Length: 220
Image (cartoon, rainbow, N blue to C red):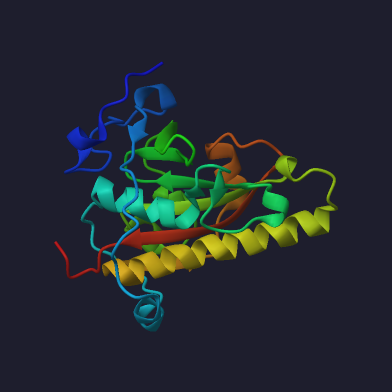
């Protein structure tokens, strides 16, 4: 088991110099996240007023505290006694996985443990899709549905339910970004086959959508 660096020691940076250009997940270390701060923030109606898509991003990296809160808003555990999440899922199957793609590598958000688990080292942001801003945003979230968790539902119902879960998570991210002055855009045109190969996904895992997140381009 890799030693986990305390979150406080990583507060001023996010995933700096962990990959070193290597390609194996063993070259990355798990990243513990901050506990969510659930008090304060902007009023919901105010965040909804400012919710929008933007395809321009500053290269400035997101602090770990911001990433921690964003991921909790997206798909975190908000009821620890039951393990239920901030976004709904059909029959509480929790079929969605959120992958965090940065210049250093690909990580899987483990909501129960509140950390990022290494998947693949190296920068694959520009390979997510053809849009140039995918390679410019400091963080790309990839939403993947694990259909194997959905039991004996029909394939049509599985895909529909996963699409609803994906949309709910995307909107949570939009609202957090509006509240914190971050830019974001959801991306439906992604290289699903290429990503399955790059990330070693199983056949039952379905790439749904991506979402770019970062500071406005004027921020340095």
